[in-house]
Amino acid sequence: MRGLSRENSRSGLQDSKLNVSSYLLTTFLLGAFTVLGFAPFYLFPVPAITIALLLYFWRKSTTPLQAALFGFCFGMGMFGAGVTWIYVSLHEFGAMSISIAVFFLIILCAYLSLFATLTGWVLRKLNIETPLLWSLLAATLWVLFEWLRGVLFTGFPWLAVGYSQAPSSPLAGYSAVGGVYGVSLILIFSAALISLFFEKKLRTWRNVVPLSVIWIIGFGLQHISWTELQGEPVTVSLLQGNISQEMKWKPEHVIHTMDRYAKLVNKSNSRLIIAPEISLPLARDEVPSNYLTQLSTHAKQNNGDILIGMVETSDRSGDYYNSMFSFGASAEQIYRKHHLVPFGEFMPLKPVFGWIINVLKIPLSNFSRGGSDQRPMSLAGQSVAINICYEDVFGEELINQLPQATLLANVSNDAWFGRSIGPHQHLQISQMRALETGRYMLRATNTGVSAIINERGVVLQKAEVFTTTTLNGLVQGFTGTTPYVRFGNSLVLGFIGLSLIIGLLPIFRGTRKTL
Image 1 (cartoon, rainbow, N blue to C red):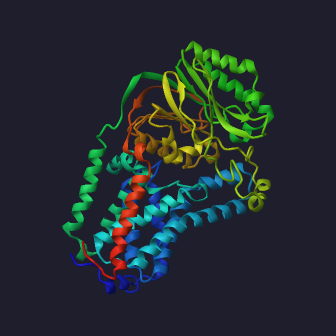
Image 2 (image 1 turned 90 degrees about the vertical axis):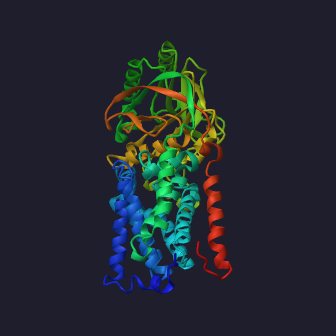
Image 3 (image 1 turned 90 degrees about the horizontal axis):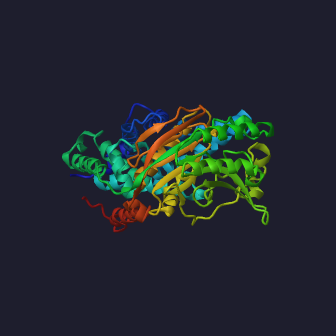
């Protein structure tokens, strides 16, 4: 196959009748449509097409700056449409004015868009002519910058494109091997190969074969059982209290909240009962002892345990934690949230950003961080890996509790997202965690989406959002180790490093080799 000629690669957009501004608008819309691949829409083929078109524009751009602008507009469209729930958190519940909330949302989207901007700039700057090598480097650079987005400044990996393939896409089969970034890598490589078909001279079987092979392999990987059943099934009850965010922290509403959760607990006959993050808006030592005794007694009658969220305070240091406490037949245990939300649960760089505390009306916005080496809880005959709210966005941290854990449990308060697509995107993130680890994921949330997800990432049961209910079900523990649990992100990062060496070596030698 002949490589892409330098003349053709520089002529594309300037020969078009459409001006560059039209392409910028087009890439913005492509980014917005990419959100259809994520929950609640689950249209997993859409990102492959929209990203393929973006890659085509990158290859046909006349300068690195032009490619960077295309990437920036794509990112602004994708994040502008995909993280609008942040506006809900800032304005409706954080008491920010509309203008300030919109300003902060734009700044965040612009920051997140920089990673696609850099991908486009570097890819065009390298000016790789060989189609398959170009496709490989496009995927490598995209995922490298996507991974950086997930780790810099405590990380914000929301809408990593690999999530769009969970759980139904054949590419979801790669989840247990390379995690969400591995799926992103395969998805972008597929999109790059698809983009070659937009040029007549590149519509060749040499591009069809690798595209077909990676999707067929993904389909095959979906049918591999990486883990195996552990013990007998366990009955569970996931409590969805549906306490409105406006009322939750008002002192006069505390008794109502405690009464609601007590009633939900007393109606459950399950061995494992899970309440959401900070179910009771009180510190642990403020909750009447007889109240917790009643909960514990009920759990013991079921020969099981209850897990409930409260604030934990330390008399000696003055620190306080976002914690989950267990009561019942097993010994009492505590899990403290480790990965905190910046500006929501802690204030980074206080001398610079401390003023934001006076703008946001978010209670308890200075939590202390729990340890990173916390172990799974022994509850109802299972070993349960706990993660609180935002923590399940970081799969590489969750696997620290594996392979010992037989079940995963995420407790959250997605009321902060309002009636947006945010809670549904969070559900899909939990589906990816189940796929990566080969274990059930139990989601107990305040307002939804509470759900039981099996080891294949399939939602078996879910509660209607913004309803007061108990989701009862039968879950199965699993044991064993997937490749992702064993190696984490190191497989993908190692592949990225190797690909960069292979892709850039000919350039350093001053040559353009064909595959």
